[in-house]
Length: 393
Image (tube, rainbow, N blue to C red):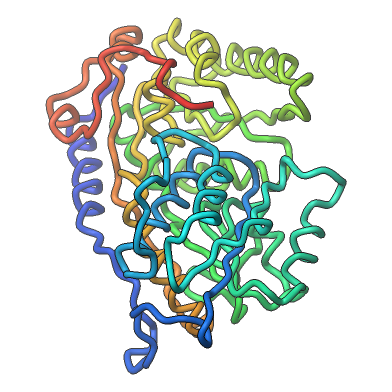
C-alpha cells in the first residue's frame, strides 16, 4: 500500500484548519432588530411540527441537539427526563415526551404533527404532511433528510421550514443556492464541501488509483452517495471512481435480496479497486463485517461516509462530524429567527461541522495498514476491535 507522508500532513492540516471554523449564526443584516431572546407568540406558544424521511441516527442526533440548543438560548427550560442515546434512530419517542411535558412557556411540540414519511401508509405521504400544514395552526416545521426537505420546499403551504441533514439541499432542489434559499419560508443547512473534504483526506492518506462506491439507483440516490462530488475530487486528485448502482430493499421481505446484491457488488469491486468509499446505504451493523470481508481479503481500505458507527462496526476510518452540538446551536438560532418573522432568505445556511476522526485498529491489522503517528495523534476515537453490539439499528 502506497503512503505519501507529505500528503498525509497536508490532509491533517486541512483537518486542523476545519477545527477552527467558528459557530456563527448571525443575521445577514447587521442592523437586524430581531434578537434571540425568548418570546411568546402573541400571548401564546409557537407550535412546532416535524417531518423526517425515515428513522435515522443522524436525524435523531440532530433533533436532540436542536432541543439542547433551544434550551441554551432559554426557549426551553427543562429537558431532564428527555431520553436520547447516541446511535438511536427514533425521534418520535423524544417528540412524544416533549409534547406531553411542560418544558417551555414559549414552544409547543404538537403531538399529532410528527411525520416519518417511510412509515406512513399510502402512496403519497407527503400530501398528508402538506394537508396538516395547511390547517394554519403550525408556526414552524423542522425537516430532516432530503425527501422530507423536498416535501416541504414548495408554496403549497406558508409555514416556515428549517431543513437539516440533507446530502445536498441545492442539488436536491430544496433551496436555490448555498447562501440564498430562494424562498422566504424555506431554509436548509448547507455544508456542500463535506464529502469532498472526506474523499480528499482519504486520498491523501492512501494514494489510491481507483475508488469504489455504491449508490441507490435513482437521481436522489446519486445525491445521497455524493457521486458528483466523487467525480469532482477524482478529477482534481487524479484517481478514477468505479461506481455501481443498487436497488435498495422495498420492504423487510426484500432485505435478503438486497444484501445478496450488495455482497455481489462488493466482491466485484474488491477485484477492481484499491480503495472503497462506503456510502450511506442501509446496512445493519451486524452485517457489516461479513459484507466488507472481500475488501479485507484484498487489503483494501474502507472509508465510511457516515462516521463513527460504521468504523466501530467494520470500516477502517472516517472523518465525519464531531457531534451534533454545533449544528444544534446553529439550527436553534435559525429556528428562533424564523419564529420571530425573519425571512429564510436573510439567514445564513452554511455551517461546516467540526470533523471527527475515527479509526479501527483491528481492521488496520487485517489489511496490513500501519497508521502513522500523525494520524494516531489527531484521531478522536480509536477502536481496538470490531464491535457491532453497541450500535442501534
